[in-house]
Length: 263
Image 1 (tube, rainbow, N blue to C red):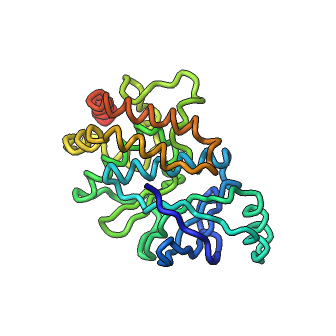
Image 2: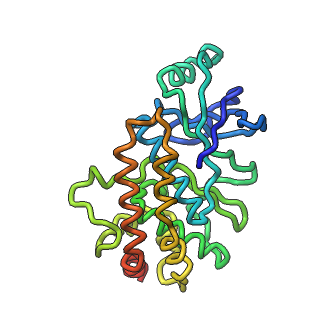
């Protein structure tokens, strides 16, 4: 499900990002080269667990038709750290899993979503789908102060989902299909799209179809896509898959909760 790539060279650190990812040139199995944003386990609070969550969220987003970059499992060649002039980069590579998470680097015309950015009528269906996605996977990290969203004209790209699926560790957690289960994203500044989605005429039909259409085979493929190098994340992935399956089966209730907080 997720294609593998091997780092050939590191261009630089990404200009933004809490995890300080690398911009790297990678080779695919067919010899094609691609620039990716490469997230190392040593840059994540929970190491490979966060990489596994990132990969799962990327696969889910693509299956839902959301504008997420193509994901890669990025192999870090042995000894790459010795070739790094930046000591911090070398140290993080040396302390990371031999397998990183990568995603296609967005074209240069894409820029970070700014507080004054507006959701046009053309962008409205995608913005609503992204908001529902974040509400269901319990993603707390598309805030005004850290949008994790890129835009170019009427196009949107969503990135960085390693903090999703935190429900195992939240006291008093409510699932997104229960009343109050989406309240976190309704707090001021907690989600970049919330204020502009309120009171808009949103057609929930395609949202329902996308979630209801997730198959058992797709959910199983998410598990099979997790590499042995990230075995420590398997429990979190199993719990996340359970949340996704439950939300799919209760998508009408999820949409009712979405309608409530946007009313």
